[in-house]
Amino acid sequence: MFFAYRDFVGDPDHVLERYQFGRAHHRVLHFVFRHPEIRVADLLDILKITKQSLARVLKELIDQGFILQKEGQVDRRQRLLAVTDKGKALALELAKLQTERFARAIAQSGTTRDQAVRFLYAMIDPERREDVTRMITQADRALRGKER
Amino acid sequence: MFFAYRDFVGDPDHVLERYQFGRAHHRVLHFVFRHPEIRVADLLDILKITKQSLARVLKELIDQGFILQKEGQVDRRQRLLAVTDKGKALALELAKLQTERFARAIAQSGTTRDQAVRFLYAMIDPERREDVTRMITQADRALRGKER
DNA sequence: TCGAATATGTCAACATGGCTGACATAAATG
DNA sequence: CATTTATGTCAGCCATGTTGACATATTCGA
Image (cartoon, protein in one colour):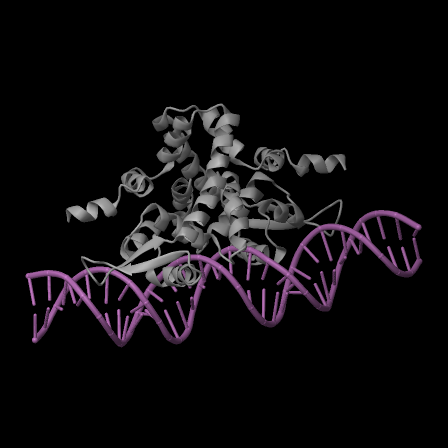
């Protein structure tokens, strides 16, 4: 698990160096990409970090034009986050590396995609699985928000 | 993968707090446990960190009596590392948490242990897989060393 | 046997990405 | 209008990684 994860995050790490970014930037970019118009508070909730930690990383992503903020129309206190075209391109480039590794691993191991996914999912704390599903499938508060 | 790994290392993290240890200590303890009489250089090679980074963590593990050093008989420059009984107990306690999670995940996902292992293995960079196997199976330079 | 290479330790400075606490501002809400 | 909420920001701390430089003991090769 340790080595699999190390190499899994290794591919993106190389690309991120080009922009002087680290893994923290990747995570932020990823979830903002998956959740257009996400609120800062919800992003913090997903990442389980403090807003002070997020601030530094987010600022760099915004400064370099990968993410932009806009005022919420409904609630103007909110700064809704979304990736720019540039951000989308990078997010996709990074995701591609990881999904390719994943696909290769499945092919080489003779497992099915479904089994691998179910196994990884089952490694997560039971009480967190639902939350994780929501985060991944982005059937998120972009939708839930509208019901509020 | 991100969430699975996060929770996978989460269990040990709680236990390690008791001793004011972090993940770095866990990794060192784990590999020293798996490789009795490992040389410092080989440990650095496994962990892929610098000796300065290792030094701090290792010192704490030695000071608190989890690991001990002894002079190599063959080469007296070497400081061979091994866990104490106390270190063994902690290593086993931590390993138990993770193997239990692993076993549960396998049972719940309907995958076989073999498939899950092969999948994780296949996630590793092909050129590193052999090394990783050696590290895990501890058919290590404890043996290889004798051939030198 | 002596000089070079090796194994390890250690000092100092620095980067990254977490953390806490405190406080500011603007907007929403009861 | 007072309070709560969403966000931002300042300042300092911690863990764990990095590089570079240098010290010491020991082994090894010419």
